[in-house]
Image (cartoon, rainbow, N blue to C red):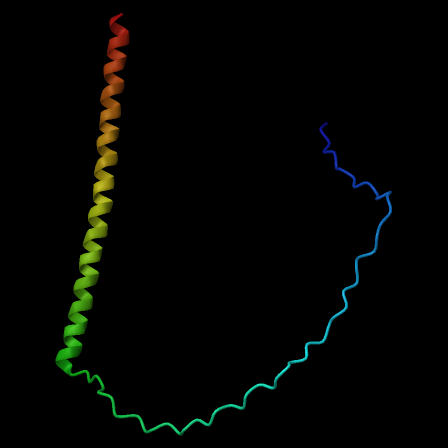
Length: 108
């Protein structure tokens, strides 16, 4: 039957030169690095306003999140419905065209 041909790699026959040896060189800085500057201790942080969730605020956040989920869900379902209606319409058109073409062929 059919047998795959496996290619073989030929052995090198020419002169092989060894790779060049690269010797590392030492880097000596000309001037010493400057001493780190003294950092003053940080001043106490002024009290920042904190956000406090009251029951009304929490209820508003939950209501807003629910509204966003409902709107996004409605949009996605309507897009899916539009695709389904388009597909069904194209299927009906295909069946009608097929019947029309079959009637034309019989009429000859």
